[in-house]
Amino acid sequence: MRELKLREKSARGAVDLSIKRQMYKLLAFVFTLMLIIIGALVLMLMSVSRQYSNALQNANTAADFNTDFKNNIDLEMYNFVILPQEDRLVENLPMRELDAAVRVLHRLEETTTLTDNRWRIDSMLNMCENLREYMTEIAMTESYDERMEQLERNIRGETGLTILIEKYMHDYIDGEVRELAHVQSLIGQQVTVVTLGALAAVVVIVTMAVFFSLRLSRRITDPIGLLANKAQRLGDGDFSLEPVATETTELKMLDEGFNEMVARINTLMAKQIEDQEYLRRAELELLQAQINPHFLYNTLDSIAILAETGRNEDVVKMVTSLSVFFRNSLSKGREIISLRSERDQVASYLAIQQVRYSDILNYEIQIPEELLGFMAPKLILQPLVENALYHGTKNKRGPGNIVITGESRGDDILLRVSDDGAGMTLEQVRALQIGIYEDRHTGLGLVNVHKRIKLYCGEDYGLSFESEPGMGTTVSILLPKNLKPEQWGEG
Image 1 (cartoon, one colour):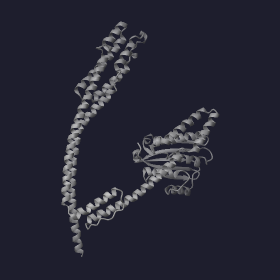
Image 2: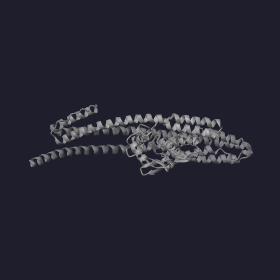
Image 3: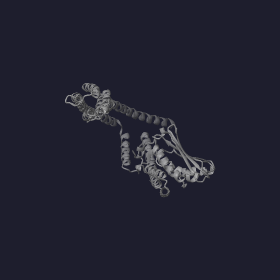
Image 4: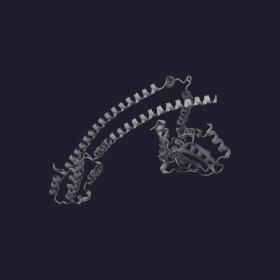
């Protein structure tokens, strides 16, 4: 009996090996053919793409050349010629327009490859230097008639340098445009060649696939057909699938794996629905938190009192900070914003509160500049600062301090919101930590912040707490550096 099982296992292994060998051959053929196609595509298009890119860059750079170059130089030089002698100084010459043109020409000189256009660039640079000398010569000429004659002959006349420079620049742009058209034509031809080659490759691949499938026995093809039908039904949304009846061990394993995949999809879909539901609830709570009526009313009342007492600078400071606070709170509907915007939002909130509680509140924000470009979920600092103020600093006798810091931790960012207020006992800290992890309502808005961080950043990220009675509280926020707005449909 044992020997029979071993023979059956060996036979199954031989069938399995035969199938793998044929599959590997087909995959090797397809992979090699795809590499050839990709290599041909890259080699054919790289050189043309480089030419096209250079020509396009040159055309864009040439567009920076002032189209009114001639008119501006002519007019400014005429105005210079008619100036009184005491104002007709070399430093008053209109060199700014000429210097801008020279900068554009030097940029073009670095990238231009067409022989005719390189000659035009060199010619225009020489003309610009001659033009500079003529302008200086005019500045040194005492006689008005001689200055006008030099102006007409050397600068703005029909043979003057400004009209020549303008004409050469037009010829340069025309040359680059013709080069773009030529390269575009080459790209079209090469795309046609690649397309035909790809079609030929598809024909060969399909032929090989048909040949391979005909070699398989009915014992294998029939269950595969059933599995394909099963996959089709799954793609149509039918999750009530029956096991495929087959005696082939490999196909049984495939069917069992398929059924496990369907079960996992059902679980993931349920989890996704749950997460989306929470996200909608979190967004609703976030919108409610963004426009806190009590904060707005108290701020407006404070502004009115400051205005009545003539403290205009504080009025301007509070109104400006309130504007920044709400602009960053709304953030055009985005949920993922830069850490710089998050810092500005909490800074505006603290600026408002410092005017209101100037006798008890001091604060510092120490987030390094190199961290401000990374992204973070919106409104994660302000709720923590609000808790530090109302549950820490205000419960302390005397002035209190709130400090916001940030530091890099490898691929992560660690933010801290610290106060030197009343603090909490170890039991209170543990209860608070358990509360946010078990989604219990804490009354401090921390569950919202913690859950949103986990939704956007992953299970490894969120809030943690350190506190000691009478010594204050520190709330730490761990965020990843690789968070992208487009992951959540934002840009």
